[in-house]
Amino acid sequence: MPTLRLALCQVNPTVGDLAGNAGLVRDWTRRAADAGAQLVAFPEMMLTGYPVEDLVFRRSFVAASKAALERLATDLAADGLGELPVLVGYLDADGPPQVSTDAEPGHGARNAAALLYRGGVVATYFKHHLPNYGVFDEDRYFVPGDALTVVRVGGVDVALTICEDLWQAGGPFAAARQAGVGLVLNINGSPYELNKDDIRLPLVRRRAAEAGATIAYVNMVGGQDELVFEGDSMIVTADGTLLTRAPQFVEHLLVHDVELPPAGEPTDPDQALADEMRVVRATVDAVPPPAGGPVATGGTIAPVADEAEVWQALVLGLRDYVNKNRFPSVVLGLSGGIDSAVVAALAVDALGPDRVVGVSLPSQHSSEHSREDAAELAKRTGLDYRVEPIQPMVDTFLANMSLSGVSVENLQARVRGVILMALSNQEGHLVLTTGNKSELAVGYSTLYGDSVGGFNPVKDVWKTLIWRLAKWRNADAARRDETPPIPESSIGKPPSAELSPGQLDSDTLPDYDVLDPILIGYVDGDLGRDGLVASGHDPAVVDRVLRMVDTAEYKRRQSAPGTKISMKAFGRDRRLPITNRWREDG
Picture 1 (spheres, rainbow, N blue to C red):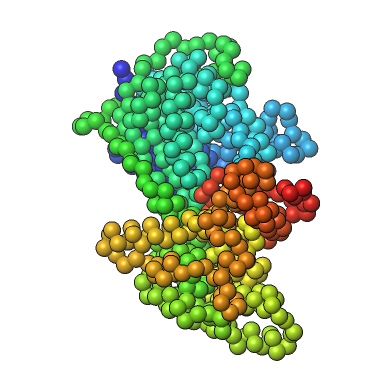
Picture 2 (picture 1 turned 90 degrees about the vertical axis):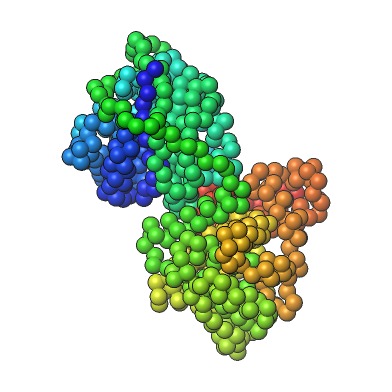
């Protein structure tokens, strides 16, 4: 049987950086060539980054993508890499955007892949299945392809597919079986969700069985606004054997020798295939000869604990948001509580202590132990620590306005927000806000106060998971003989906003062990009141919590973006009207 040395390039592109992304392709193709690769694959929309959203509607951007693809093919040949076939995702179009008045039925923008070889494009493929759920709006942007592209490479028939094609039965993978291919290349921009890696391998196995062929799955890595991509590239045979699997959350070159069946007689291009697809065939005349030496094996990476996985996702999402948007540093309020402690530790892991400013903003209600915990965290992590007491500013407001109760509590939070934004303006930091998903769900925050900020690393992290992450991060540091970054007293003390004497979160909210399961069912699971009560939750508590969630939509709509780690993050995953009189209690 023929053997192909495949190279899956799990890399981190940036949306809109056509030149930089093309440079990544050239650099990683050189590495693949040095490893003896005979076929190289890059992720979905590698040249443009993913998702490009409404950039699709800019004809100038589409034209730039197509021009960049042509330049890349030429540059690879000039680099001495023209004999190595390289599959690259990019944005194409065969007609005006679908939203334009001159749109043509069946034509428009395409989520595309191109096989580059000898200075040109020898084959293209247009994504067939277009996802239109969760964070995906591809029906808004793209026109689906109706052809399966099969390229004969090194005596093996290779089908080209893109991301969602893998997630649905039928279509390209069923057509690949009918076309008799030996290998399916599937290039991806598949965003991270907790435990998605547990779903992905069984899914690839199902498609491999459906296609009757080996699948080489390559996924991008890196952060893009709220999304983070974890890689997890792999190769799986037709019988479900996992040959190799890449690590999560790091760029990686996965090189593996794969035995594949030789190509047979081509099928009739007019043969009716699954979903009425047709076959378009191309041939790569030659590939680099087999490399000498030992067989290339990519190895497999063992899965890690959920907390480790989430921590890596949050660190990568924060790092790329800061770096890709060219912020020099970040600033956050350090209260001494668990949320700000976790965000500070994430920021230090993502950026290093010299790029993180933590500001203690004590009021007359701030306890001594909270101030000490903030200072202790700064000492443990080495971040730039400052103290800016807010009470004189609060007193000035109160001397000129008659406020009481919650208004005074909110005033304190807003003074803190003003100070953080002033430091951002003065010194160029990005302000990180620290509210967790539980607080965002029930509106337990002050608009323009503690909600102030340009990015929220823990926006999609439930409060109970915040505690788990803190304990895991400290334990991980201890395992590596390092100083645990988070003071134990920050983890163990009852949560409090400390905006009034003796205040605790439990004065306003149910205990988080009670609150979070209700929120998870309502927000992530779309359960109604009856479903939550049937699950065993107290009806009165359910009614109370749901009212808080429903009336806080206007706050969430104004909240900072933050890394998505769950199946349903606030934002594009969950789109509800602000003006809405429907209530689950009738």
